[in-house]
Image (tube, rainbow, N blue to C red; front, top):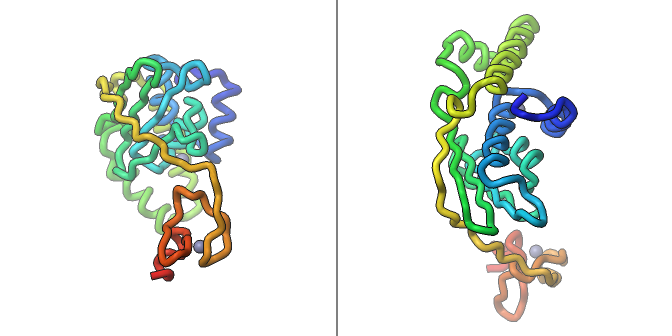
Length: 200
Ligand SMILES: [Zn+2]
Ligand SMILES: [Zn+2]
């Protein structure tokens, strides 16, 4: 189970909504983070830079303590199963990248099944077969040695500073309060990003 207690494992699955190979991969990436830089805490601030917005991102947030709302979970929309963890105390960082075969060898039967399920064309029997295959693939990822799943390299600690104001002003366009850091000032008015287009 990727070094997790049964209870934490159940909770991360509940948080994500289902067990799947992507969640399993994120669970294992979090395991690397814990070993290499430690989990995020007030004493050990860690930033996660995650290059996918798919299933693994939920496991990373739940298990490392780096979360979107705290600003120490940064999403780069690169479409990669690549995860960088940086320990701010000393700048130690690692980039954890899934190997091309992390999800198992190519399996045309499974790919065909996946397409059918995605397009809503699968029968109940095919959906059940898909669920079972997903469960097996996730299980294999949870059991695999970490170096079979990932390439882990030292990473430079390039954490973009979080430039967030803590003051609010009311947008002259929509009347909604907005952080001053996110306002545009023009023609003596202030506009949120939603309104700034129409304010031109
Ligand atoms: Zn999932
Ligand atoms: Zn507005």
